[in-house]
Image (cartoon, rainbow, N blue to C red):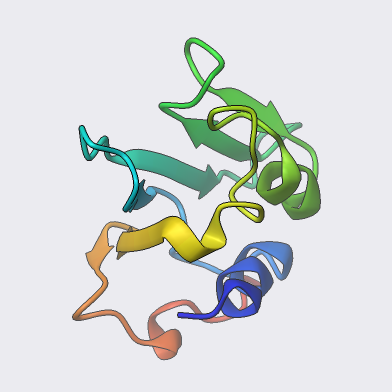
Length: 104
């Protein structure tokens, strides 16, 4: 998946994107990391298993994707290392864009 595709899902606040998981190919421990969107929250975008203990929240998708919280670099900066595992808790091999419709 291209960076722009995943970013757009979050920026457009699509349904079924919470609990998206990924790892960095360069991580020798293969730590599964998480990102999500919870529309009911004041800062609805979040990242887990990052440089900030307990994770962190953001007001916009851009802030989340550009936050330097993975070894001092962002998801955007490290995109060439990202291996998506799930989108919205759906295995990436079974995922399709129609599973994330616009959330009205």
